[in-house]
Length: 74
Image 1 (tube, rainbow, N blue to C red):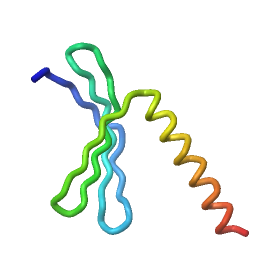
Image 2 (tube, rainbow, N blue to C red; image 1 turned 45 degrees about the horizontal axis):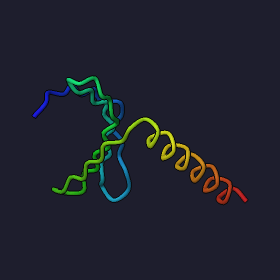
Image 3 (tube, rainbow, N blue to C red; image 1 turned 180 degrees about the horizontal axis):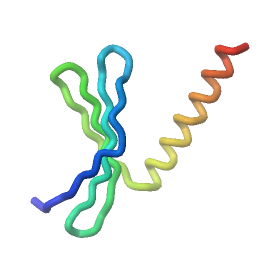
């Protein structure tokens, strides 16, 4: 197994006592991924994303948040 270095980007509290952690993970090979970890009770879900996927996912989340906020104010 290859060595990796991990840097925490964010730790977020989510509804229903869930936690979301975002980490920058760099592998010995130089590959860099965004690791999303979701903690639900004792269960952990981990997803590693490349920069393109993280960009598309992030934009989709921003679009959703903007529309959700607009729906609440109107």
